Amino acid sequence: MSILMVTGIEGARNCADVVGTQLKMEVEVAEGRRAALAALRRREYLAVVIDETLAECDPAAAEKICELAGLAIPLQINFAVAGAARLVREIRSALHRREREQTLARRAAAAAIETELKSTVAGLLLHSQLALSGGGVPAAVADRLRTVADLAGSLRQQLSAPSEAGRQRHL
Image: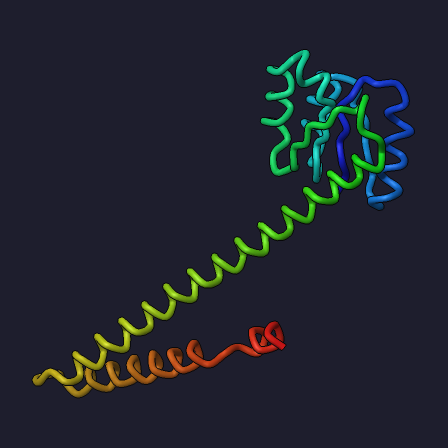
């Protein structure tokens, strides 16, 4: 992935080269709103860094750039004041924050899926055992219900046992 810098300042290419070298990423420079919008239509970026001066002069354009940025991290920085070192720090910080947020979101999604799965398996086990305990169930149906109960019980045990991946994470 690469980074898009939207700025019209002189020396932007030099700044982009320094940022690219330090972050080990390709950095593309768009010298204005139209160039930025064209670049965003061509490809995806990891981050879009907009010069604050441009954003203040044309807020609608800055907003449009952020809308088209997709999943890219939008950053506004005053290029006239900030040097390449600050720009690198800001981008690095935003990338780390995004990584932490994605990790937390993956963990929350995995926990929700696990809870839902455990609940469904518990329901299958309960209903199949209740059906078996009731009288008047034909033998063929009872055999199938026992199979469902056995499978649900086995799945429940597997879900309750800590996974190998989970144990490795906690070590």
